[in-house]
Picture 1 (cartoon, helix red, strand yellow):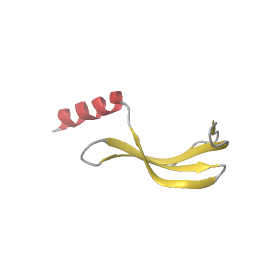
Picture 2 (tube, rainbow, N blue to C red):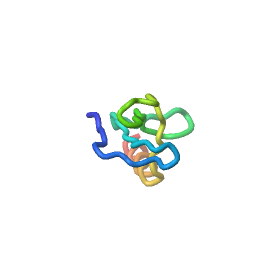
Picture 3 (spheres, one colour):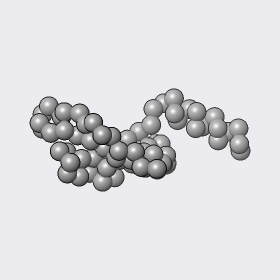
Picture 4 (cartoon, rainbow, N blue to C red):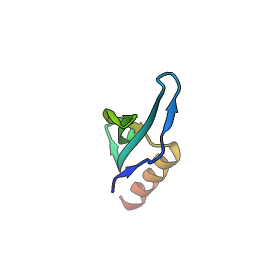
Amino acid sequence: MRDKTTEGQLVPGLNVIETTETDNILRWDGHMVYVEHKVFHNGQMVHERYKRRVTAEVAKALLATIQLNA
């Protein structure tokens, strides 16, 4: 399921509206847990595989789930 933000946020230094789109899949690269995003400025894609770290709370919950099921 893809998640696309309908409302963006103004990036003051660039004077653009930034929106993102993600598939909400957690990924692990050996160092961090992240979700990939496509980043758009004024509707035009500027970054396809931007890595956004998950919060510490999400990472801890994921670790607890893995430990319970291992």
